[in-house]
Amino acid sequence: MSHGAALQAAQDAGLAWTLEHAARGSSWWREHFAQAGVDVATLAGAGELARLPFTTKQDLRDAYPLGWLCVPEADVRRIHGSSGTTGKRTVCAYSAQDLDDWAEAFARCFRYAGVVPDDRVQVMVGYGLWTAGIGFQSGVERLGAMAVPTGPGNVDFQLEVMEDLASTVICSTSSFALMLAEAVAERGMRNALHLKTAIIGSERWSDGVRARIEAALGVESFDIYGLTELYGPGMGIDCHRHEGIHVWSDLYIVEIIDPDTLEGLPPGAEGEIVLTTLRKEAMPLIRYRTRDRSWLYPEPCGCGSPYPRIGRLLGRTDDMVKVRGVAVFPAQVDSVLSTFDAAGPEYQIHVSRVASRDRLAVRVEAVESPELVQSLSERLHHALGVHAAVEIVPPGSLPRSTGKTLRVFDHRLEEGGERG
Image (cartoon, rainbow, N blue to C red; front, side, top):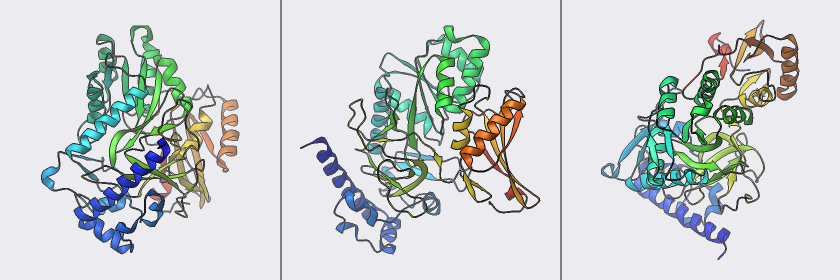
């Protein structure tokens, strides 16, 4: 049997188990399927996923705290959850098998990035209810490397530990990696460090940001994928070719849909990622709309990996803001700024309403220059399809974040208006 045929058979079997497990274990899932008029026992395989109804983060919030639980509470070994900054906190439960699968998937990510047991891996992401810290640490320990769990923040402390313990790998958000890169450059510390690899996740980051991080820290960087509902980070990573993110198709199925029509899209077409798990016991996902924007590569990777690839994230369908009827995404602004050496990587998008008309402003760190303002304005207008006022602010003046960075500020809502 070919690898493709074997994978299809495994996905069909995993999906059948997941549907039966969810229907048996949770009244929420039974009602969800019944309302959609779907008898999950009649599903012929992964090729018929479109017969199943979607689920959303709002569904998970409405089922708070454990309405999606499909195993006895006595079998739950850990709880994780979101920060709750954009609404009701979401809670996700894990069985012992879930935690084992997650650790192994994370270790696979480290292997794809060339991390070996001799490495010292500094984990600079959040611990607690958030999945990142313990997820990274579990993957390091499963691999057999040394974990250095410094957690987020405190650049001085991070650099001290990095130098004293000769850390070779760092794990962080792109925002914090940029903060470290700036500090290393300012202090002339690069030759004092032993870094070779950076594993970066949690937020979308551009090729321009990647280049800045790699140049300042002397590392090869890898983009890691995941979300709390899907175990956490460690659910995919790019290989050394850096041509898309390999996703673990033995653990979950990826669909790409049009977020407006909800129809499936072919490989190569950009849309919203939808996920269905194949082994997750405590809280499986079934056609879960992530709001992440990407695409599926139609061809295998040249590295020889059997795992399919998605494109590096383009952003989220819900981070879009409409200005005079035009959809504007932070990723578009990020892509333009990355082509200007004179502009820093930090930026903000501000939308307001002036005299009943939407106003879009992009705030950028740079040395004041009329020529730069004009060039940026022209390039942004071409990329966005709407005029953006460019506001230059001094380098280092925009807020830095140890976690996800807020990019879009829609003041129309504060002014009592609606999104355009």
